[in-house]
Length: 297
Ligand SMILES: NC(=O)c1ccc[n+]([C@@H]2O[C@H](COP(=O)([O-])OP(=O)(O)OC[C@H]3O[C@@H](n4cnc5c(N)ncnc54)[C@H](OP(=O)(O)O)[C@@H]3O)[C@@H](O)[C@H]2O)c1
Image (cartoon, rainbow, N blue to C red; front, side, top):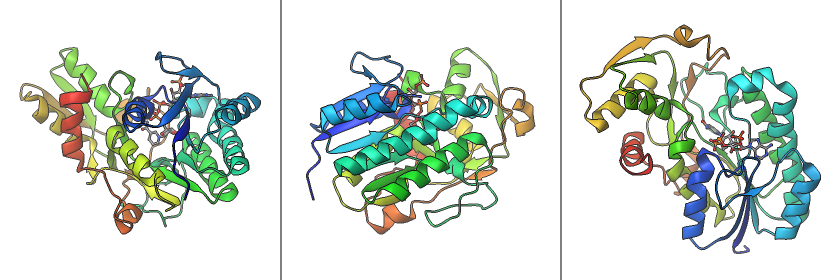
């Protein structure tokens, strides 16, 4: 199989991108990183909804692989902006899959645990998707388009993401910001279950897979199922903050801001990574400690 040297990346200005860029640079790849929000000096502008421009830039760069990170990731935005969400998360993905096919290069697509309805305790690559919100539906269509169009693909399904420091817009960052603001009580939901996923580990696993021809779909999450309460407690333990109290609430408590239905369980297991002995994901507590003590700063 052809060695991968040149990698084209979309949506690299977000949480995953901010771990991916230094990792791929350090490993010596020629990398072109793009986003519609040029928030770093190393990013070039590319809006994946501009299909012709995407084609032009990718053909000009002549990559050996394409990593497609760009997506609208806010569940609330997706629910209120249907056309933008379908264009970005589905049609742009289909366009990039078609370009990958023409160039005969592998494509990496980041799917999500949000394609499942949460009625099972745990999901793996053989589970049947049934998304319950617009974000999940648009991401599932992207996932199906990649599988339908390509043979050489890696579909990566992460869980509850953390990582990226200032780019982090998810639960861990939400907790850390409240602690930094001096809050002495944190309201945390107790009715949702998932598998945390550290962007730092995730991109190393993507890089390891890219060097193989083990094409297919991979649930790529840190080891261990958990809930938001355990994660909040782990954060306080790592920070040695026994002066902060956690109030357990259910999801209704936050329904004004987070009005989109979320699955009760988004737990994934890394069945296929384990099968091919290429699982680089750490236990979530170790990864969280690494994040808070190094990356977060
Ligand atoms: N974050 C999670 O919890 C999570 C979980 C599972 C899977 N994923 C998937 O992982 C991938 C990477 O997401 P992430 O976690 O890094 O989220 P992120 O921080 O929101 O990054 C996504 C990036 O894509 C950009 N983008 C949005 N629309 C674009 C467009 N039309 N053209 C070019 N760039 C565009 C975003 O810019 P703006 O910020 O300006 O919109 C953002 O910089 C996505 O495919 C996402 O669906 C994420």
